[in-house]
Image (tube, rainbow, N blue to C red; front, side, top):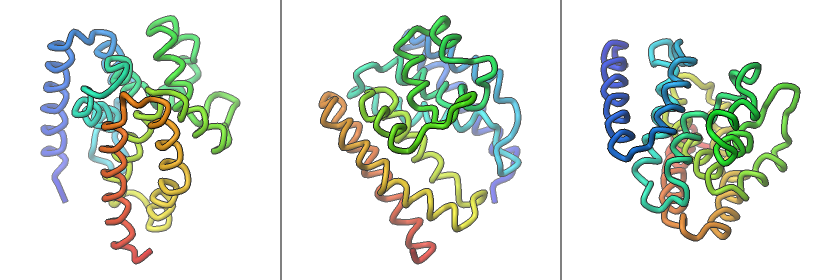
Amino acid sequence: MIDAKVITARHQKQLAVMRGWLDGKGYYVAMDAMELVRSLETGLRKDGKTPAFHHQLSVAQLLTTLISNVKYPEETIAVAFLHDIIEDHGDVWTREALQERFGSRISDAVWKVSKKTVGVTKTYEHYFSEMGTCPIASLVKLSDRAHNIYTMLEVFTPVKQVKYVNEVDQWFYPMLKTARRAFPQQYPTYENLKILLLCQCQLVRQIHGA
């Protein structure tokens, strides 16, 4: 088990590196998105020791490593930071509020990657169909699931862990295939995320004998 102080130190270093990377790229819209979500996610994750914002930061960091084959690079990083904001803070941060602050391309992608909103829960069919038609939402959702699988072993029950990897087969790979055909410029990025998910899911299944 890693000590909470070590986790906090690593998180602060990761945050500093991200700030420097965004500044170097001139991605000030994405930096604004990062600082907004960091101000909202002030607690801890389910393990009781990892900063809540570490999830959004890590999803964005994964996508920075793949950015050369992304159609809308800054917008994709911004949505990586914002991907939970409607689900978690939709009383204030609605689709319309996000559009006013960040523009329609970002707000539309955040909406598509949000399964639950105020008064609305999308069906899986509708949810993944929408994301498959969006070059931003599709990448962010794949990266989100990769980080969730990476961090779930200490906090999810074995049943939920198996459910998460089974959902990758049932919903994520078909969505990935649709998006990969629609956005060939992003083909290497989709392939990279597919391989990452394949390796993660295989490991989880081996652990549980599923």
